[in-house]
Image 1 (spheres, rainbow, N blue to C red):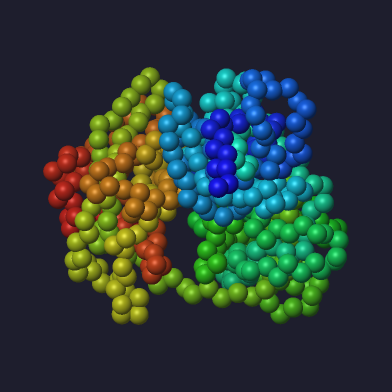
Image 2: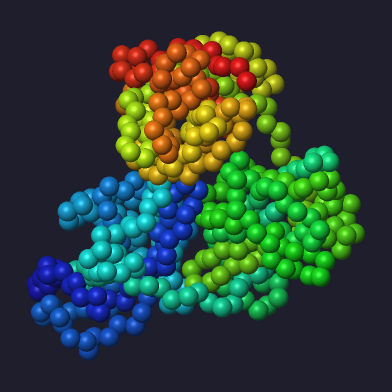
Length: 520
């Protein structure tokens, strides 16, 4: 009989130089209210002449097949999602050393699946504003250092190369500007005019790129590019008052374009391709000062009857920068039919805990819990869409608003321990709406009747956060709105309520409990 096959190599080859893969750190950016840490996995030539630093290991992993990729991060961080090659993927978390955990994804890739000229994007997004992802940053004294490992095999050799990320170099100078190679299109929807301000509504639509190389100069594609900044060419004499992206107030600036025009740059968008829904365009508004019935020279240049604006999207994919440009086309988005505001028919309730003070700030502690939804009648009779009742029984949470005293200065807000963005909008002469932005929690992120903490910290010592405290005679009362979308029906939800003091018994009674809302 033939001899038995050789046993599988039990010793795991961990020397980094004996395998062709390297994970590089690209950087981090603020996205929505979260922080995305961006890496790239690249393929490099294997040099087997380097010294074996940790003792002899027979064989090498020069043609290693990768089963999984791991990165060690702090174990107190809340991972929101992980992307590989600009696509959301499943991930696992398991303990590593003290205060750290491995975040792992399965790849099952062969060496020939990689292009040495095109590193693959790998992104870990954590909830809230986070400065440092990895413990290696501290013990390596480098902002670019994260411990990582890969696992796989090369024939009979077990492979587990282990290393620390280094800084990825700058992207290619050439910017991919062909619109057909990118997934985003800007549409003009409508506008309203007044002597004080004119509001223009635009939308970003996601399409399937044709990948046609219009000018024949760029082999690269940006079919799943990030969208970091959007620029619109407007006349020089036009002034912008405000830009909002899905109700979020956005930073913007101007840069010169031509002798008669300038670029309006909407900054800080910082969205990835999976953040967009191809079926539902993302709406943003530009508010111009005064009565402006033609803000863009594109309409004049193209002799178009509709509002037409030249635009550029800025982003990145792999080691390429992306700057597709085009002209807006007329788009149509169905008008919203109103949102369900009856608290009893939505699944979340907010309650208050004790206040904490120090010498400079006051922190108001609240929580939000998932409760069983009682399908009771529509209290105000307005939450219907063409006679069909709007359903918010499994709504996600997009934002949360509190009506707080106008004179208070908020210095921090948290949701489930994550530090989130916030903004103010006026409610009445004595109060503002405090918006906690980018909560982005789904029903599946909660456990029934298990509250998650919410905190609002203001400057100075104060006993009351909200005007509702005086109205209801309780320091823990705050008027709030929980807004979101009920998938898959896409019903809009804006449940209104008033917090009261938290106990488990009171929470269990909250499903179906209705509190009248203050006027004004």
